[in-house]
Image (tube, rainbow, N blue to C red; front, side, top):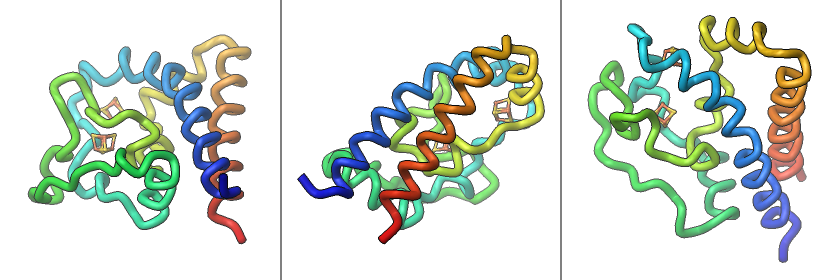
Length: 133
Ligand code: SF4
Ligand code: SF4
């Protein structure tokens, strides 16, 4: 197995560990949101996103339905949030934290907050390694 593939599998695992932590905040904040952030302009996977997804699972490259107006809802936004598993979303989707989410995170107990930061840092560090020389 290549080094990049091994790192991609580790990143996927790290995303899967991180996702429930972020979901615990989005499930509180997002249902009542009046300015949903998921608009189509955010949803394009860049080449680095696609390289990671291909390495982690070549069958998991998200289909690219036709783009709509950049200001309309993201093509991957379903009735209960994003239809893509977190590791298959564009990198920027996981790294966006609106003020209500940040507030919930600040209110969480410090152990949980620290675990989430560590999980985010782990994903970022591994992605850096995978994309490096
Ligand atoms: S992440 Fe924030 S801005 Fe986006 S839908 Fe949820 S509450 Fe709204
Ligand atoms: S989180 Fe999902 S629905 Fe939201 S912008 Fe990203 S890909 Fe689209």
